[in-house]
Amino acid sequence: MAAPVNGLFSGEIGNYLRRATRWIPIETGNYPYVTARVRAKKGALLSEDVYERMLQMEIPQIARVLGEGAYKEQILAFAAKISGVDLIEVSTSRNLAAVFTQIIGFSEGGLRQMIGWYLDRFDVQNVKTIVRGKLFGATPEEIAEDIVAAGSMEESFLKSLIELPNLDEVFARLEGTIYAEALASLGERPADVKKWNRWEDLVTQLYYQNLLAVIPERTEGMRLMREWVRREVDLVNLKVLLRLWSQKVTLSYDPFVDGGFEVSKSELEEMAGLDPNALASRLRDFSFTEELAANLKDLQALGVGQLVRSVEKAHLLAAGRQAHVHPLSVLPVLDYVVRKEREVQNLRIIARGKESGLSPQVIRDLLVI
Figure 1 (cartoon, rainbow, N blue to C red):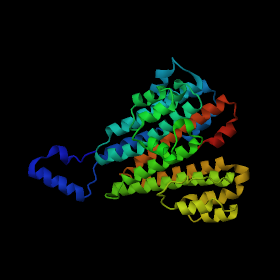
Figure 2: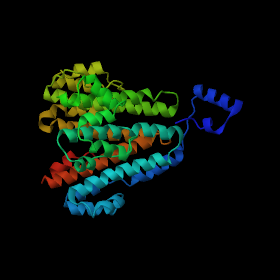
Figure 3: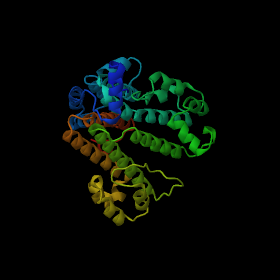
Figure 4: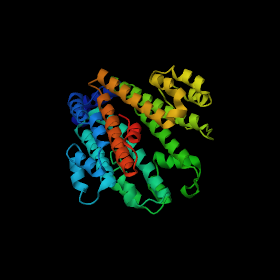
């Protein structure tokens, strides 16, 4: 987004200001208003007690509870067309998109720009969902249920991708994006790709590479956001590391994202081959994995999924602490984005778990609260 002075001043004064703003970092954005609005939204997130009550309910009861709270508008809009798990999944996805679009709408200046960059993660998520759906033969309606139009791509554009008959046409429409760039790196046409997980890892790498490239440390707000993103890179890499380590898998390509805050790619590659005691010792060196290191010895009993969820819980706690320390920055907004997305994921886990006949305890262990 262009600096406000570009549209407000002209002539010599305008030229001077435009030159000055290239060199003088200026923090722009309605931080007090946006952070106050976001704090109110964060207060409306579901509490652990509500999740606990939902674990004792049937799916229609859960939908009724959601229809009495923040998801009321979406539940009412879709209740006449769909029901059960589908109603919960579609309503929560649409609510997520609506809430984040609203936040973008009432944000201004550099703050709005930073939030927009961060929300482009939903474009990544949506394109991956569309590709997976077409690979597994899902119907357009089934794919559309999982779309969250909260990034830069308009919902109409995403629907047009879903309606295309094959992946060749999908990637033709995505020409010039990181998705087509990742495919080009594989050197194959969509019909010839055998391991789409490599393409997905490349897309993730390009997303974070581009995100970090547009967040220079010119202002305090950008510095805070850059650190936030780099810590998130550590989280993404740690989850990849745990899965590779637990499965004793050696990939033919580099799956890690560059730019982490505490852990370099070379360290991650080395840790993937360590025994449990050595890995636990190395993880204790990093602030965000202290608790994980203590639980690593219980890997066989807990399973890697439980360890990954413990990492995600630790991330939520750390995110909350960062946002609390910097209350008038972009961090409270990013903290809310992470928590709201997690809430929707939890609701989907509960709904799907209920549909599959899982016990409340099994579902509870899958939640990240």
